[in-house]
Length: 553
Image (cartoon, rainbow, N blue to C red; front, side, top):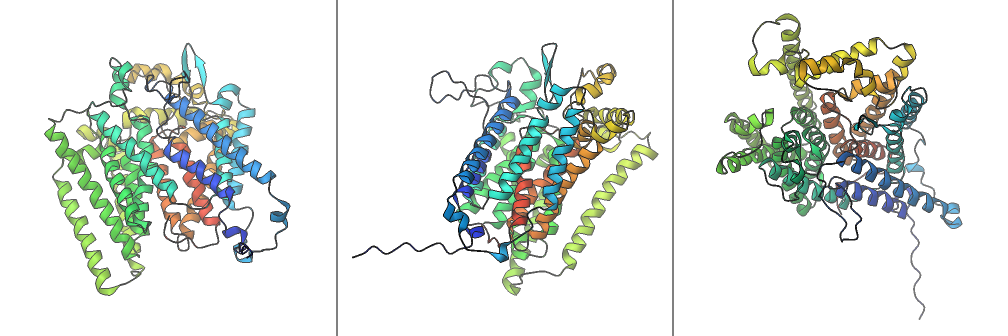
């Protein structure tokens, strides 16, 4: 009896899950599961070769090199697959006209222009080594953030890899949840002086590290960026996934992440997560099922913060110093009122859906909601402008550095921004267009170091603490505009594609939160690589002409 022949896969090639897709997802799984936890490797012959003896020493460098190596390995594997593709596959007659798409998108062109701007900026930079590697050594100390041309090229390669080879598999995002819950828990434990990985052993006498560093990410600014990339994804995956088991995983991890956002003690996480919450309440406003789940997630997040406050009180509030907005949210009794309102809205949406089974709500709902949030944001900006330009005398107490822009604003970020723009105004035309070279802010700002030290006891800086100002000075107006075109195009296309590919909203959530917190934060090869990954996934989802169902394994 002859063995029946295996049926030929008649799916169009664009709809098949190939070995190339496997490689892209293995890359993502490693970037999501290992990269956030990676601190250092010590090849001393002692299994498992992973040691935390050096704690936070060189943490940024180690993650930087890990990401470069991981990307290079994935690209080499994809190239080998491309070179070894059989003649039969090349000649296969199985066209998929419906899935045809433009080979080059606006986002592709923006990435190309961005890389070219960075390359030109590097070639003509007076500080070639700094522009290329993103780091120099001066007087025994290192300066720079590793954001040189090499890393920019790596980001472009990651973009091409994912937009051409990625196909959704949910195990990748469960891997992100797995690493995130470890990162978040470690942060909470570290905030209460519990150090299970012994990462603070060398820093007991270093107050800066001991107070401001946590988990396997680094200082609180780095960690706030990481939260703004990962937490929105986990919260929106809870909304979109269909499997109950996976919903529970995302829900629990996001709740712990909300606790971590409190102990992070950085107001930049408030900006990022606040923007995410407002934008996605509007994005989900017409879909009762998704809206009620998102409201449930927001309610649970606030409850988690209050629960952390209970745990803290039971332990005598023996934790590191915290003073950011979310700490006040954890302590305030007004939070109970907000929880009650969100819970009532959640229940109301469940009742509405069960009684009327409406798939969509009127268009007026997101319009009114968007107008309300827009008014709130404009009012906040108006208050800052009023106290900064009109009423400059009123004593604002502890809110001085928030509501009145001055050199002291935001832990003297105001000084850095003002002086950075003063330096940019003095550039000649070529420098205005292409900057001084990637990651060369240290040299640009060095004339202001003496004043920085005299006024704020801060000897130097190699970042403006605003990513957009940093790009403007380092790679010029052309570099900044092409960067904004890159991320803006991917984000816009993701929102447009959300009807046929709901996953686009998941990836867009990370981009919205990160772009907002970047106004007061620094690009680093710690959270930024994950951000670039989600920008790439936004574009990859938008490029797909095949509708993506709600996530299933």
